[in-house]
Length: 299
Image 1 (tube, one colour):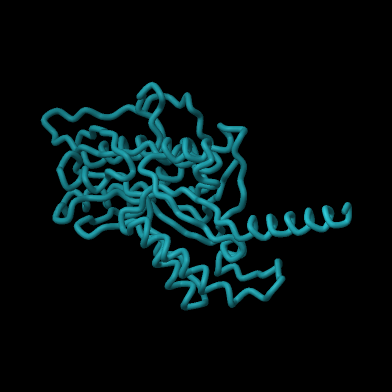
Image 2 (image 1 turned 180 degrees about the horizontal axis):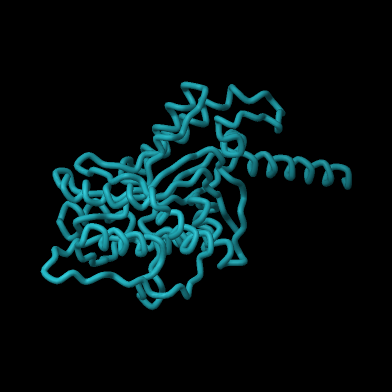
């Protein structure tokens, strides 16, 4: 009888282990505007199918830097079910309540969250995922786009972008001094929507004090184009609506992942199908910040 019970226990544990291995991991991402949650999921599943045959059975040391090694290995082993969130706060709450197991964020944002919440940890990095961020304008607003582009290009050349990134991202401090905006008499006011959903890149202080990298960038752009800048707050998922309704003239646009490359055509196509954050009717500025690594973090 003891042997039977022991055997039964081993079978149950074995089945539980198999079920656990096959169980998907639920992952949260900030809402992408160029795709639906269902399309994003299909793209991720297509990516999984594309890379699975490329990995030798039992080989945990698969190396191909152009194919996002850590992500591919993890993706093949565990299917990820994607959930879109319009705000960082709602995604954090879902993580804390275990509705999702992981969240994917740019490296600087992931490090910010982990450093401010001891209950979070970095699970793995998505290396070789070059992404850039830009400002978005309603199609047809080419004159304002050109003014922003000229300011951004000049800030790249004179080192201002690097200096501000070093101060507000690399050496971020929540008590950074308030960013001062110039007030140009009789000048046009540009309404710029920021999200606060990617600290310290896009950061809104708890007391509402204007600070952070995006704010500093916008203050510098306003000074160079000699126009007044007024910040308004929107959710990540509300960016296009803010432009369409003309509530905002400019929005903080999340990312452009056109730089992602892979030697394998199927993998490259699948990656392109997953990472889209742009819409027709929107034109983008020159990029003003970039990163090569995303972090997957969880509890």
